Image 1: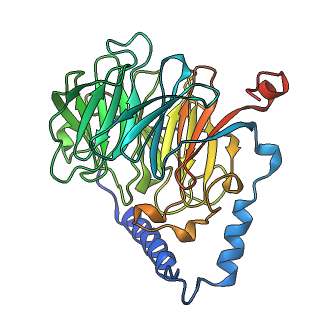
Image 2: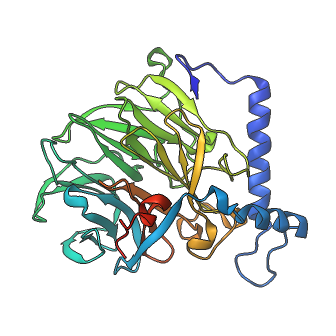
Image 3: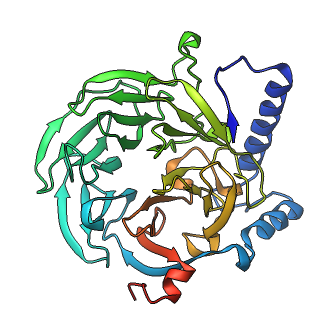
Length: 356
C-alpha cells in the first residue's frame, strides 16, 4: 500500500508505459472477431498464456460455493445486502429481494432499468432504504418498497455504476463523467471527487469501461476503484487522495486486463473482496492491500471468458458484482448467468455453518 498526499503530473516514462498498455489492450480486442466468421485471430501462444492464468492453484482457494440460486431476471446489474442479510438484486426494471437462503421475499418495481444499488445498513438514519441508480439520477425506496424520493439529475453524461452509503453522506460513482458525486441523505450535491482540481489534491480517474466502484471503508475513508490505473484508491470525504494499492499483471496477486478490478466490497475488518472482469477472479486482499486468497475463479462463472473477450460494449463482458453479508459470506452476482452465488470460508463450511 502506498501513501500519497499529493497528486503530481505523470512523467514521460509513466505516460509511455500507459500508452503501451493501452495499445496492447486495443490490439487484443481488435484481434478478436466477434462476428464469429473468422474466429479469434490472436496467436496460439497468447491463448495458451490466458488458459494458464485461468487455472488457479487449489491451495489458494479459501472459500466454498455453498449456495447458488437464480435472480429470476433476464438482465442483472448489481447486488447489495441489507438488514437481516437480505440480498437485493438490481436488474430488468426491478429490485428482487431474497432471504439468506435464496428464497424470494419481495419485488420492487422500477420505472426504468437500474444500473447500481445500495442499502442503508442497520443504525443508519434511513436503515433498510434502497438507493437505486436509474439513468442519470438516484431514487430511494423504503423497506416496504415505496418510492420516497427521486433525486435530481447528476448530469446529461452521467452513467451511474455504484453507490456507497456512509453515516451522513452518499457517494455515487459516475463512469460517464469519471467522477464520484458526494451527496447528503436528502440528495443535495455537496461536491465531487475526481475533478481536475490540483488545489484540492484531487486525482482524475481512468474509467475506460462501464465499471467504476466505490465503498466506504471502516477507517473512515472512501475507497474508489481507479480501474484504468489497475488500483484501489482511498480518499477523505472532501476528496483528498490518501493512499492507493494494486498493480497490473496476470499473476494471481495482480489485476489483469485494461481496467480492473471491476467491483469491490469491504469486510468489517477492513479487508477487501475484489472482482475482475474478463478473466473473472474474485479475491481477498488484506486491509493494507496484500493478496491473501481466492474466493473463486473463471471456471465458476459465466462463459469462462478470458480477457481477450473484453470490449467497451457492456454486454461483451464476463463480469460479476460482489457484496458482503453479516456472516461475512461473499455474495457474488454473475452478470452473465443472472445467478447469485454465496461463498463462505472453507473452515466455516467444514464447521457445519453452510446453508446446505
